[in-house]
Length: 313
Image (cartoon, rainbow, N blue to C red; front, side, top):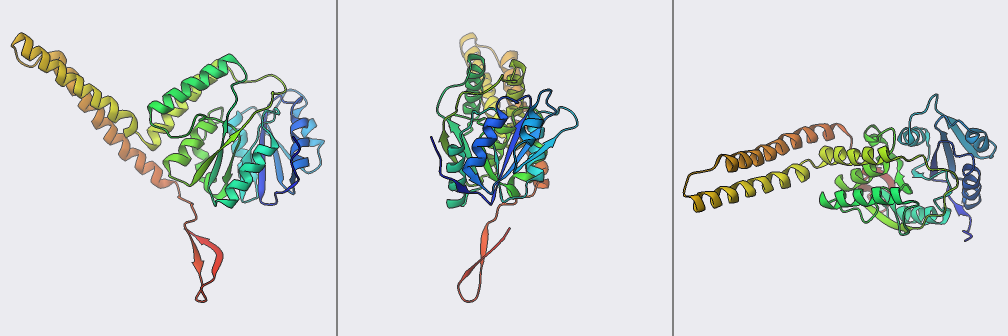
């Protein structure tokens, strides 16, 4: 599919790359053909192949290289911090993402005045292991009442740079950056949208391993405990309290004796869990209050009734 050339003078595209010499050239050529005047930033995470040289061969591409391998999340943070445009997009270096999908996301975030547009893949995972991992993450996300569609960790997304930058410290250095930023956008109640996309066959070998799936799950729990700890502790506490009460009533009524020790322990554990949730929630609020809320909330109207382009917080 051929996409018309788009004026992207307000867009920075950050591409994290590690050992992607086969895919980075194709990816950059497609982006350069599609986005006119976009700032394209490749962050090479100290690849052992010719990724850096292949990216540097393309005119109009800014290429950075880490001093040592730090991880995908660290590469994204490096790119976002050096980006200079109002909007910053994430794009994979392995040809999986399509420029036409990014073009739709870019148009949507500007037209609808959003803070973020997050891709939602409508075709399956590239292999069985990744498919199972993504399924487990979706299952956990639904259990924690995270309303983020069917794809929590799609890497194609675009943000208003001024909004996402303060949260860079929360993004893990390795994988799970997509998970964490999705949860940040949802829990901070920013105006966002989800856009259906399709992925192309990747070029090269995936660097994602099974242990990275466990890290992604851990990152999801950490993010939930930071932004909404009551969502985790309160259901568990309520279930334990109900089980303790029901068990104690059954034993007391059927055996004709007082409150059983087991029921008391279960009931007390539930109360302790809920109390822990309350304490954790207070700690969470203290930490979140340190982070600035940079959402533009209004425009300044002059005495003549015209609205200026100036935004304030």
